[in-house]
Image (cartoon, rainbow, N blue to C red; front, side, top):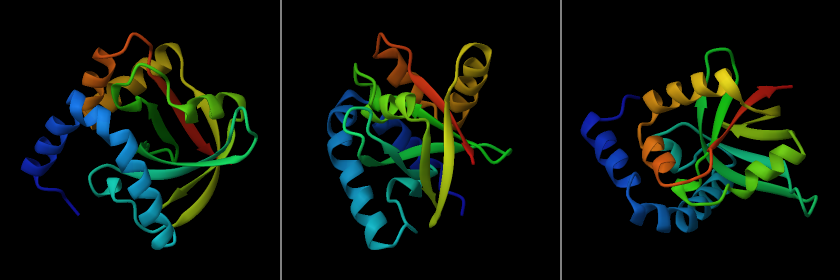
Length: 159
């Protein structure tokens, strides 16, 4: 279903703000996890505007499964790109450290559990993915402008 252009622009404008970046990391993931469980993996609230997955990765320090709802960019070849933007916060999100240490993970995508292998994108491959992501969701540029770190991008390939 196509989203109204005005609504998409409004959400993009709001999601680019510093206020959103302060509140969203505390509110959106909790809402997504609750609704995802309630609907047995069929619905993510945040995925109503952007495609989304729930990533289950092994904790880098704890070794325990960690579930994180994330926006993603599905690619025509069947892979997915995840963006470690952390809403423009100064630190990398914890899930990126988990994937660096334990690249074998699982995603819930439209009610299906899919085993995946994560690869940190670098160099020209990262640049091409970043350009595609900016066309896909322009607010990522605002997030990148607020941080001194390079935002981590991961390609998830089904295993």
